[in-house]
Length: 487
Image 1 (spheres, rainbow, N blue to C red):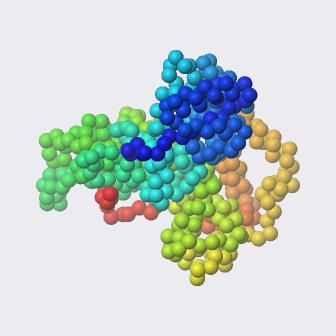
Image 2 (cartoon, rainbow, N blue to C red):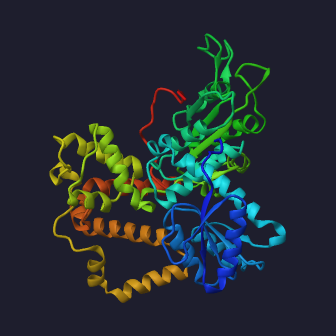
Image 3 (cartoon, rainbow, N blue to C red):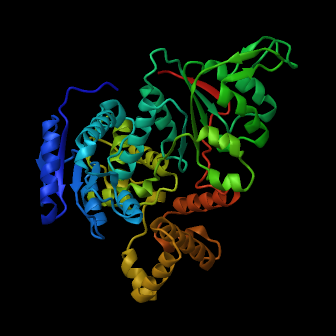
């Protein structure tokens, strides 16, 4: 990721009239350092990084930061010599600030700000590059934050990466991007090991290789995944599925890069960058004793969480049109009713689920005209004549009762996702119970398709059995646990 020739730019936003003097000092210092500075106080922020200058942050500062961050730009909070309280510091970060700095002229803060702008510019140029945007579609703040973090680790670190997230959120694509951006000049191949397909009795041969005659059927020596990944990247997909005995076998090779083939006494060496992915909650797996703590610490040097599709609603339509164009070979417009349906539909399988929907609609579409409601398969069409969710709920139980339940959940420390997910699961359970187990009737009552309801119930069953986040992917190749990806 070489530094581009583009000039460094940023915008300065004064928090209030009392911050104008400090904002002017910041802008003047950065201008002397060759940074192009724009004053955007009172206006809409550009896509360049924004410096929110607030000498003494208060309870309104997080709201301003959140407004600036909605444009998916980075926000650097610059405060006076006295830093804000610890609580307010973390609150500013949770509302979208990328960092917080105290402006003490004796510390040469302008140099530190310029260094951050250079790093961010390199990362953002990479994220905006065509080869990234064409493979990892999306411009929502949650998605960009995950991509930026993965890019930064790939290029500016040498340690391992753990990708966590629900099934279908793009962990494999993120691993491929990570390998592609690795700056090693003698970089080898990306080797993928699907941990869900490894047979425990053959795991040693699959991972470490074996000597001729090491066991019945070993007619010749074989290299394993660790040897194949030498000088390259090893991707352990769904690492949370490994049994404990196999986890123990990985400790030495992950830590020291040394291993023995099955049937050999000679130590061999391998050097690779390790990327792991899982849709399980490894913290819960650790508590339950199903995942080794020593292995977890070796794998989780850097952790990036890929957000589910419900946390990036603004990316749904761009993703759908991208998949549709791939399927039909050209860009197509969407009938307004179809666009609304795509945006409001639930996607238990995340991006993979959305892609499958696009493919099913592409099969039915004919001609170069827009995608029409008739192109939506029968089993996907929403029930007609349903009132908006908010008004239906309020008329059924009353707005005050809804507010009381949500307020109680907030007092107990529940976040937005927890409340929404709990409400959704309760609605599914009660609808199925009231329909006597008839999923078609329950789906009609909920205003969803039977297919969607079946997906949600399967997802809930997998969560219960695995204590994880989401359904396990079943679209795995049964032929081999190890595959080589072309770079």
